[in-house]
Amino acid sequence: TWIISLYLYINLTNNEPTTTHIPFKFAKTGHPLNSFDRDYKVSKSYRLRRKFFNQGTNSKQLINKLQPVYPKLSTDKNELSQLGLVKNIDDQRKKDEGYKKHAYNVLISERLSYHRDVPDTRNELCKNISYSADLPTAAIIICFYNEHYYTLLRTVHSIIDRTPASVLKEILLVDDFSDLENLHENLSTYITKNFDDRVKLIKTERREGLIRARLFGARRTKQDVIIFLDSHIEVNVGWIEPLLQRIKDNYTNVAMPVIDIINADTFAYTASPLVRGGFNWGLHFKWENLPKGTLSTKMDFIKPIKSPTMAGGLFAMSRKYFTDLGEYDAGMNIWGGENLEISFRIWMCGGRLELIPCSRVGHVFRQRRPYGAPDGQDTMLHNSLRVANVWMDSYKEYFLNHRPDAKRIDFGDVSSRVQLRKELKCHDFDWYLKNVYPELALPTDNEERLKKKWTALESDKFQPWHLRKRNYVDQYLMRLSNTSLCVQAAKDIKSKGSNLVLRKCVRTKNQMWYQSDKNELVLGQLLCLQAGKKLPILYKCHEMGGDQEWNHKGENKSAIYNIAAGTCLGAEEQKLGAFITMKLCSDPNLISWDIVR
Ligand code: LR7
Ligand code: MN
Image (cartoon, rainbow, N blue to C red):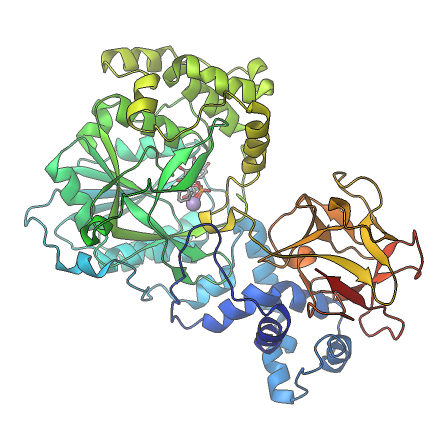
């Protein structure tokens, strides 16, 4: 598949893979799976292979299908086998199931083995720093629910491999009542055989959710510092020392590593830029650029950076301080909100939350969470209501206005948390906004516009920073060659599920297609063109490529091809009002399109 991919990249899309709003070029990883990386990025080979595999298409048929669109496609047998046409049904099954259960590529994860080098993504200057000889001792707490066996074990191995034994005293694996068959037993066997007794596996008595599972773990250790990590991470060289040093300097410092990106499809490890944590009035965490001037000198790149909030999963804190500050809100369920709660609490009650640039830990960012709450509760909303009612004073109204549905929801008893806030004599939320996060705009004027923006952000909440903003690289009309007919929405431009039709070209928003750097075609910057079996439709952009990924040569008389569907954009008839359809690219009657800029 990489041949198609490469070909596609160079000859069809002809635009460099650019990152979005944060000016940062990905470091190439150099790990052995680079070919997968290339392959996935471009062609979503997984879908492609599955599609052709299921249809039993042989290489010849595939070539015939692709030739009209990719005339330079090789016909060499060896190259074809590399196209993934020789498939292994067990692998394919494992991969499909893995995506369902874990939302990442377990096949590649398993091929990587328990030990692998990751690129050292630290700033050069980090290597010159020396740390105290008597750093505090650490317990690492990793909660997991139905985590993939191999990925979890690589998490543990990476910690053992890259953390000095003088500080690493305990790794507590808290199984949050997983029900994946044999997971716990297998882990237990592996751990007894392969690790010393610093690695402990414990299990909750019922599904607690990550917040109470962390409490369960934290209360079972006596080390100086606790470090929470997600169960699908790999730590980088020298990750722990700068965190512990910062806490040794002051026990109210809470220290976070930079969260590097482990690609969920390829497991390629790439560096993240220096960004800090913020939030919006929907109480969703978001990454944001550092305030102007933060990085002025060379040394600024390695100094601790104040952050208004944390993403939640990866941070180090003095155990005593964690307890003194009221641990977590045990009334929070499953997932969400606890990260803002502890961030507000740290700042408002006298602590300091910092990003430590010299500490780097990779995390598998996935497109969706592969689990929910057992009772179907919207735990993010439930937990956020608790945050708002305990910590945000009158500012909570901004959140409530933004979520009218929240007013009717029972978020339980928060009196003990209100009491805690009193006892700790914390600043109020107004102080926090003025002193820690003055950059946050209040939803005063132009409220409607902002509201819309937040709603859009909501669907993006599981995205890593580099996937969050759509980056348009081109805009054009798609005109039926040799006519003056253009593709436009059959209904109005905003209606999800609308078909597309041919209308007189008029160059309105209704006919303007914005091409994103992921090769989406977004009509009027609203909805994405999505391939169907017979007809394409307009649908919410899901940013996962596949049926929303379109390729063409960008010139007149182009075929417009969708890889996932394996078909091309056509029209029912070549006349006004005709529906746009999906056609075999090899169809001799396939019409061609002009890209009119
Ligand atoms: O019921 C559960 N029980 C658990 O033990 C649900 C989850 N978990 C475990 C799970 O196996 C994982 O190890 O808790 C950990 C976090 O769950 P994820 O990986 O599904 O969460 P996430 O990475 O999507 O979400 C981020 O926000 C969460 C809010 O509740 C937590 O704070 C996560 O730790 C946090 N992850 C990170 O900060 C990593 C960087 C991601 C970003 C941005
Ligand atoms: Mn995670």
